[in-house]
Image 1 (cartoon, rainbow, N blue to C red):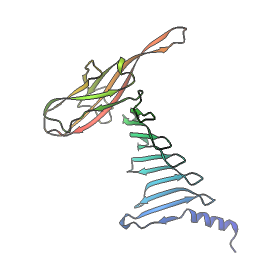
Image 2 (image 1 turned 180 degrees about the vertical axis):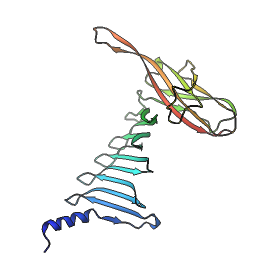
Image 3 (image 1 turned 180 degrees about the horizontal axis):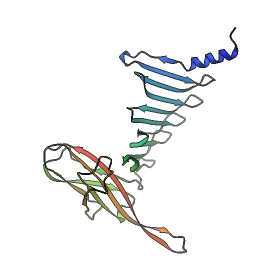
Image 4 (image 1 turned 90 degrees about the vertical axis):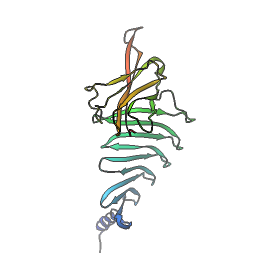
Length: 256
């Protein structure tokens, strides 16, 4: 006769058993993990023995989070509301946020988008776009639309920038570029930069020069400097502070 303790261990072992699903030559496996009450808590999807996707569930069986592995370094993260609508989603590169991360309200309306870059090995918050209830972009957003052409040509050309920030009326905006900037921007304080300043924040632009017909990487940053006041601990006095915002950009274009 089987004891209750052995029966319990047997049942738990069964709950953690792999469920094999035939998918042609993909050799796909799905592993479902349950708690002691038989409630599902995780689902893991493997392809050719490699974990590709993992889903977590709440105590009431609702999906709370999903991770999808694109490769060894990159994965997509999705977080969910109790109604299983997406709350936030984005990509991690070696556990650092990268690319555009989007957040939504419980009804699925887009609330914000934040762009992250890995700069010199560190996570950097680059652009930020916030939406109101009518899906209009809010004033506190900081972002740039760079009007890249479909291709570049041999010689010099101008690329215009639509730059937006809450300080745009009282700031100085310039664009800095260089062919010598590394792809992780780790050497921007060491290389000579071509700096473009128009004096008109509604007419921001920078120049690009191409010497031959091959692809060119345009790499640099937009720098906004503005002055604002901060209260001092002393009565009736303020500090005048110079602050800056730096938005990085990186674009590869063909040259014809």
